[in-house]
Image (tube, rainbow, N blue to C red; front, top):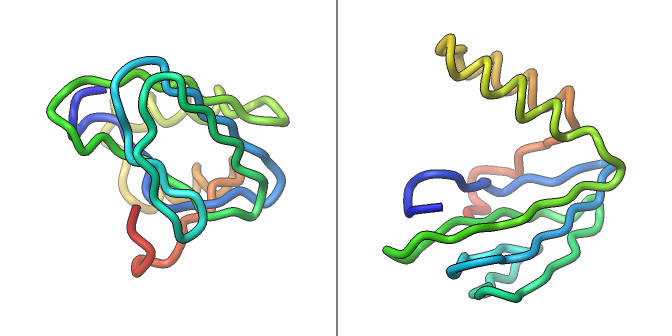
Length: 111
């Protein structure tokens, strides 16, 4: 993931745990109020109700494997891709995120 491409701003899940495994490169991973440089080989478990997010702050690409428990988030990604292709608005994106248990954290808690 080159800088400025895929990232996840601060959010949490009420009924879903999330796992991150950095395959290549380096990301900044936020877990709660802490930020960590996560290099290739880093693993993080994010329990439900924990604010988290990530971004690539480097000029190099990075590859991140993301897993959710329980499963089902792949449907969110498919629907978000369709929404982006038809230039869906902010309200539609927010409704889709809420439907898939992705609750944005307050704006003052940046990744």
